[in-house]
Image (cartoon, rainbow, N blue to C red; front, side):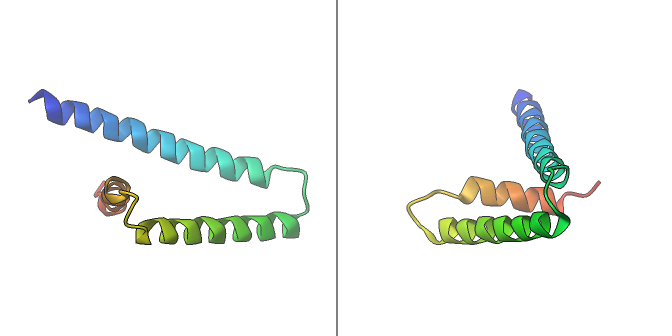
Length: 80
């Protein structure tokens, strides 16, 4: 019975870290002293870069992305 509790706690901690990091990054970029157009272009370029890297990593069979893939699916399909 203890394993599900630990897994649930770890899931909550990991979710908090991911969400906190995303919020902090977005706030840091949007509050930076750059012009709006520059910031939007930077965000667009970086998000595309991250998307392409993720896509490439998932295609690479040497990396085991199964855990992260399951985590993302679980986060996106979780009912509140």
